[in-house]
Length: 182
Image 1 (cartoon, helix red, strand yellow):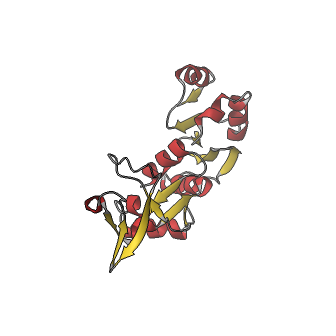
Image 2: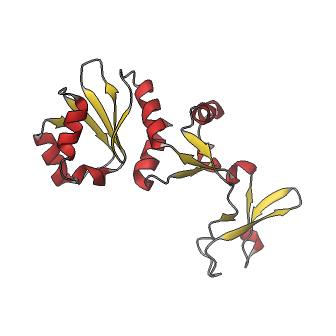
């Protein structure tokens, strides 16, 4: 689940939200643990649903209505396309990247505290082998001038392992030439 959330954060940026429906693929216990750790923060419920893929109604989203005991995302043109929803489908959660980085560090048994290096870049601790581990959800920031030096300074002279979902191949070469493992 942590990997899935990290990938979502990397793909979506700092304002990442996750639906209750998407979280349904994970155990309730795992979701509750991340809610208690404030990695997932429940936000307001959604009041609209994506339109039917083949629909030409012109709407940006379908309205959500209660019909009897059911919650429905209503298609304005064809009721057969209505989607029956659950309360979990309406829930939305924001993802706190820094707290997620901390939980990832703890799950990996890393030593030390999580320290923010830049937007979307954290030093999350040291591995038993002595490497400093840096987690990056915003690969665009890796291209900023001086970022290699900032990461090395945060690592305090230890070897660095950088975990990033995707990186520009040309910049990957620069990072590897600087002695940083990707």
